Image 1 (cartoon, helix red, strand yellow):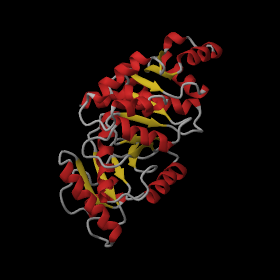
Image 2: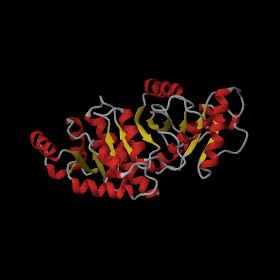
Image 3: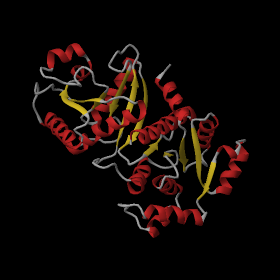
Image 4: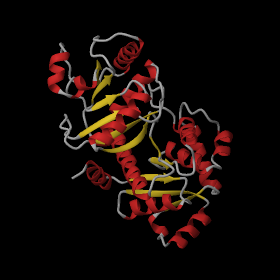
Length: 336
C-alpha cells in the first residue's frame, strides 16, 4: 500500500469540511465532487449559490453531495463576521472583514476561522500570493511561527530510512532565502506537519555542507543560528544539526561523523534545506535519479490548514492534495 493510499484511508475515518471558494472552476468542482462521493471529505462550495446549483446541474452532479454556501446570504455572513471579530487577536474589524468577504476566498477563510470549515482549498483561479495573503490576514499564523513555508513528502524506491521509503523535505517551494528566524520556523512547522499527516514522531535534521563544524562560513552560521532559535522556541521537538545530508539519514555515516549523542543523526525523517536553491535542486534530483514520487508542496505555518494547488494541476492531483489537506486538518485537531 502506497503512502497516498494510507492517507486516503485515514481521511475516510474522519472526513473534514473542506471549503472550495473556486468551485465554479470545472476541475475544482469535479475534484470536490469525487472526494465527497467517495467519503473522504464533506465538500463545501462557497460562492453565488444560484450559479453553483446551475453548474451542478449542467455538469451532472448531485448537489446534495455538497454544502452550498451563498456569499450573498447576509444573515449568515453577519453571523460569521460577529463570531470572527469576537475572537481575541483578530486583525480585521467587522466592516473591513465584510468588504473582503465579497470575495469567496475570504468568505471561505472566515468560515474556517470560526470553525464552519476545516480547510480552505484554492489556487486554480487565485494566485499563490492571493492565497497566502488571505491566509495570513484571516486565518493567521501559528504562535511562534514567523513565516509561511512548505513541506513535501518523497516516496523513494530502494531507500530504506527510518520511515522506510519515505522522507519529508522542506522548504522546496515557498521561502527563497530564509534568515535564521525563518529557517527555525520552517523546521518547527515541518515537525508539526508530519505529526498531523502521518503520526510520526519527527526527527528533524537541518542540513548544509558541514557536519558539526567540519566547514565554516556564513551559510553554516545561518543554519546553526536557526537551530538555536528552534531549540529555544520548541525544546519538545527533536531538531538537530548542522549535518550533511548523509550524516542526517545514513546510520553508518552518522556513526563516523557525529561524535555525540543525537536522536536525529542517521535517523532523520524530516530534512530542512538551508534555502530554496538547495531545496528545489535536491527534490528534482530525488525525482529524476531516485525515481521518487513527491507529494506536495503543503503549505504550513497557518493556524489551520490552507492549501494552494498548482493552476495546471489535473483533477487527480487536485484530489490527492484535497485528501492530504483534510488528513492534516484531522491530525491537527487530534494533536491539539
